[in-house]
Length: 375
Image 1 (cartoon, rainbow, N blue to C red):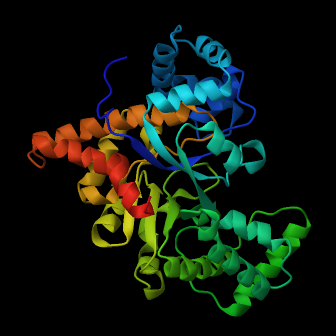
Image 2 (image 1 turned 60 degrees about the vertical axis):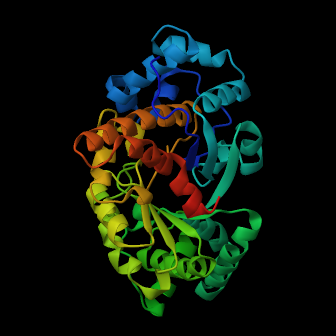
Image 3 (image 1 turned 180 degrees about the horizontal axis):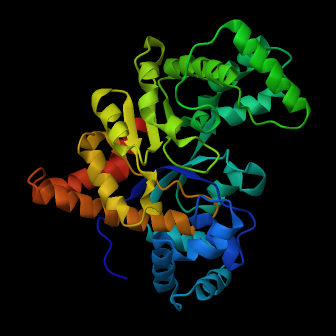
């Protein structure tokens, strides 16, 4: 493996997920963590030909000292206890801190206390708002009761170690968050409650989701805490057009939300829109998690595109790693390389001097996250 640029800068990975308790043991199971598609045909036929996956196998084979094939990489990783594999990968990646959203398939993944013992770095929890609301919906007998319990849980979160909140409302009803009448919100509550009694707890009613987000924004603003917002691409159950962060502009300009530090996640293919928001609003930041490394050779272009408008103080690094430790390592390794290529291009164009490149990298890889999350 060649030298990794900016390897001396410890990384603050400000958005990731927990690790699977039962790690994948077959090629098909391993591949599914390198695609956003749930379709078996895509995983079996197409993922082996994705540029990111091909690069990942070569990088991992080189690191693990084995042949550059799926089977050899799986055999090499299986020979190591998970704790050793995690420690080896994250130590090599110089990951100093990880902020973890535990809302993704929690039954299959390590909870916070177990993950904190497993990872050789600082681990801080993120609270996913929709998961919290769904948990509280079961016991709530009215919209008022749900709102009260939701607000109380948010008020208590910082005292329980939570360093940020996250919303996935883009997946459920989109980022065009509105104000709804009490009658609309109450009807949506009763509809969701009926579905919850039927065993289907996945909130999707826009009046209820929007109403609860406004409740959350009021409490988060009082705390002066960050709110991570899923934007852009992801699993295919979102409507991509409604995940454009430009929809958030009325929320960002509302007095109730001015004290909230919004961090736009992922962003692709709306990198320009996210960079504009980060450039013009004092309380907006962005990252390129999932975009890097899943876009493969497009990672450098995404960094360069973000920095066309977003100041160096407004772009954060994150991996959006989930389930397998290799994604933490690949995110850090390929993220450093993509950032270096983008900064080199910017320097050649005359917008950075040689001495400013390392400073810019330090901000993006760790400094900005330390400031935003007050780590």
